[in-house]
Image (cartoon, rainbow, N blue to C red; front, side, top):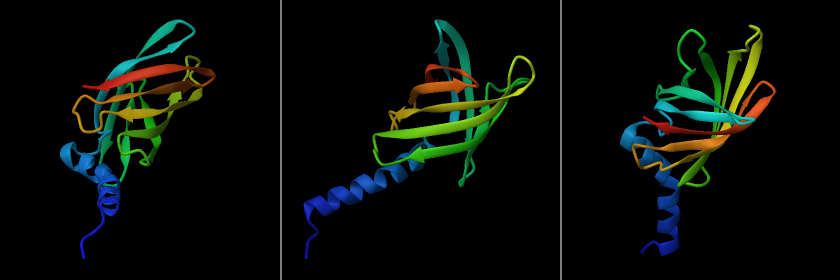
Length: 134
């Protein structure tokens, strides 16, 4: 008995995230650069994201003022554009802890130069962001 075309299409769609991860490692892995906007002010943004085979980890704006990533949630339901939420804990200008959330869409999964864009929230400030994998 031959499998139906719709069954084969379903298997392909379900397995695409695994193929994307197998080609270059995890699609979020790498160094990303771009910017986020808040009330007309553009702010530089760097992400250094790692994949250890089980978890996505990393740092936002690596260096003395880097914010370690504390949580990453990925919705794989659309195999061509994943929904991603990255949470981190940074330090505000006063030295007080500040919550950082990047919530958006990861696109061009099969390409080396992927895009991640959406809404960046840092404490009470929020605005659009766009980063490209370097």
